[in-house]
Length: 397
Image (cartoon, rainbow, N blue to C red; front, side, top):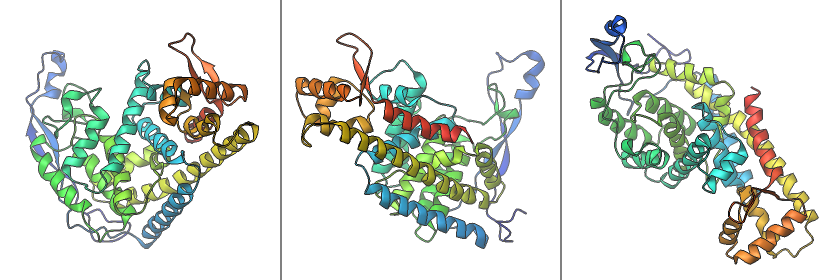
């Protein structure tokens, strides 16, 4: 029987139930049809509402230290430059999407924020930002309805047919598209999803579990249930941030935990597998280490952006209340802009916004991209470089 970090008390493990498959075999070559017919093994997810993880002293200490580090990071970053919370949220959205093999440059993501739909991955990352925003906004009521609402923000444009409800079909991870028989893992049959999610919501409501431990275990349980046809990974990681906010560990800042998970993605997936086998220690330790890595990378990004802004402010020979000076916060948070965006952000006319952009171009804060009256946009290369450096530090793992 699996143990938890060396402790003999078991965590409830996933069991499996033979389940009949009624999929269409018309597109399956005749020689392979036997592989995708008959019974398959679907998971039965055990309830965890009252379960208690008995972790080793070493893992619990690591989780406690990571929790304290997250709280310090939130306090320090909240007192930093005003655009930083938005920047960190977008960085976490990009990292969480990267786990799902959705990558894009900082410029592509910022352009997608302005409505450019020419790059699919960038649009998906922007949708994930909306999911993260919803997760934080809904943190005060972590229930089934709020989780469905989070998922809607992620998938409503790309898959409107699957939003607004739990899945009504069998899903599986790995294997072939013909059926679940050769999959690496088959989540529970959709008839079991509602009960499993009600149990998870009850676990989320507990106040007797350390916050990071609770978030890690809840995430693993959510990924095991896989309650949606698509978008489970990104929604599950967004729930982590909702929990950190709900439990008071973070107030204003999104800690880029997914960036930490990306440093060893194989370990992350192995920890999810170990959790299903009855050992929650690996996922708790994985999240603790990811939190430390996220804070290190997040602090470095904040330092780079602070240096950029200091250089800009030194070069600008304008009053502190001038539109060009006020625009610094805007182009730090949104490093690709057009006249309309800046005008709306600052509450000024298009003419004054255009004048401010001209000043920023003269002082090498912005450079123009695109041409023509309708397509003109401007980018902040220094900010884009800092954001791409953040991603590159993950890629060099």
